[in-house]
Amino acid sequence: MIELMVQEEKARKDFSHRLALACDKAGLHSHGRQADIAKRMKLTPKAVSKWFNGEAIPRRGRLQELATILGTSGSYLLGEVAEDGISADRSNANADVYRVDVLDLTVSAGPGAYMLSEYVDVLYAIEFTYSHARDLFGNRSPEDVKVMTVSGDSMAPALTSGDRLFVDISVRHFATDGIYCFVFGKTFYVKRLQMQGLRLAVLSDNPAYETWYIEEKNQDQLYVMGKALIHESIKYNRI
Image 1 (tube, one colour):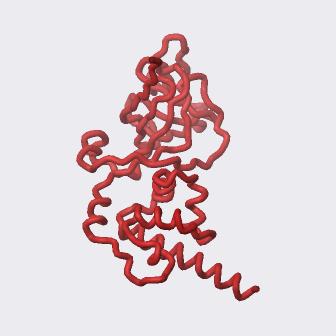
Image 2 (image 1 turned 120 degrees about the horizontal axis):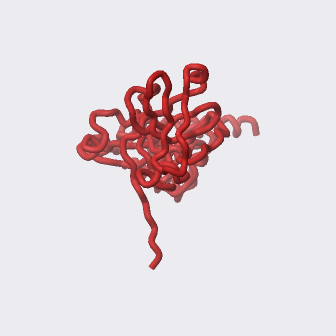
């Protein structure tokens, strides 16, 4: 019984190792690939993470689906054959994909949203060609661009609730006037920040919301998460 358990554990570890190798050769970047695979297979990221962590091996149907995504075979992932079968053309094609992670994070365009956890999960990734991404994000690395979801109406009409906001997370402090995602105290916001003399004005586009200020005495409570680049609005109309 113990010997069987050891064999099963080794099989799971070997599977996770070959899975990681296949992902690398197929051009799937290590950051975000679990969420990417989960999205394509319509599974939860937690279920897919078990394959990568050596905790489980997918059943035959899922195994074949996973192998097809990577361009390899279930036999390779199970260690039954040595050749992965992934062509160089496939790897090069995937290398031209610019992936932006959509975070499980909502920023408040309103009175603020209380920060419940310091840990943020990746829900899935949005893919662009590098040429299109360059037009949208300049020369920024995909690691520096993340998507957050807007909630509330304080930034209307510029931003409306439900918009997807593409944010440059390499910006970790106030640089120039603009729209920022930030934490003040333990609360999330997306607001315009503008330097006015020796204090930072927190501005809403919606005139129903009053301006408030971050001053020297409380600036240590400000944590900039990133500066907004572009937004995408998804509207649903009744017919």
